[in-house]
Length: 339
Image (tube, rainbow, N blue to C red; front, side):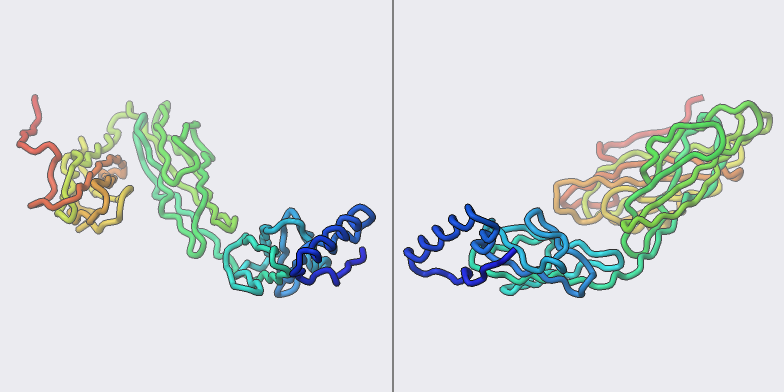
């Protein structure tokens, strides 16, 4: 193709514009030289070979076709790094922009657009953590916990749980960090269930970890009775007030509760006075909205290693209050056991 570059001057007079239009029209009807009537864009890539610039109107190989011609007044360019490189920013001859893609106007003539790349830092793969092994009873609700998994640079974007051994159970969702299932019935003794967690970071790197859940037969003599977790009643409190969580209602019918473990699962992060206490405290955060909801999960373990979980919601209201957080309804109550 032969390009007639002498047509690129800006025509200031109406008569000149008319002549240019007629000439372009004639060239468009007679041959490929019509491209010379369009605005010109010069595309460069720096460093060479590190990436491509793509657009519906442009060649995807700017090193071969450094000059292209367009009909549009404006167009969008996307910089696509080659493997081992990452996009840094765009540089054009009238300003510097960092967004990708960018839209550039060619209504006022030639534009030089440069996509800047750099060698990408090597990705650090994630580390999967499928949680602690557990011992549970038949028909118990069992929570898997992959929330301890981490990725040091670009973050985890995917969780995938897969059962690899034992009687088949149905997970509430195999693609969340902490799914749950109902422990199956077994014939006698105990049965191990194995689950494998695979985590994926934003760069596509993966890692796996496995956890074992031992299910015990409830009909066996001298079998351990699992604990029952009780995270207390939900509360409505004022912002910046002292709130007390209450797991004292948890119990174990045979060998007793060995440990308590509180974990915040929703809302602005607060610091518990002692996550391993039955009744830790924290200061409710200040809020901008009228209310916000916080959730805390209590895990209790008995001396045989069986565990149970329960959750409680704390609703924080805007405004000031006096004293520590309490129930939302006010008044007094009496609790006890009827025999």
